[in-house]
Length: 155
Image (cartoon, rainbow, N blue to C red; front, top):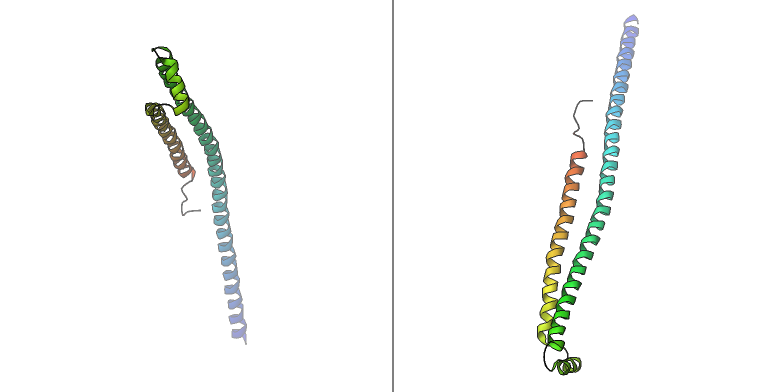
């Protein structure tokens, strides 16, 4: 009987040590999980802030660039048309007759060239704007990646 009691006591001590070890391991796991969750939450906030700023920056840059390109297009076409009309209608003999003809039958095909040249200039300027937007997005992507801390295996 004494042996049975001793054996039972040993089992109890082993069980107690196992429960304590299990409790310590669970506490360590919780510490690690909490640390990872904290890193995740902090990194997520930093990345969301960067993306929010990127969105504002990209919209502002695009709007500003598109407005400038459109104004350049309009100014270019207006200037070319004004020069064309001045030379066609005011600088030459019979200009008023040409003006009447153009009003009735439309402007000559050569005028379309002004719009095509203006469009080409607009597209070149927009390429620069879009490249700038893409570069901003690329810089933000790298900044977001760099803001994520390296996680080590040690607690």
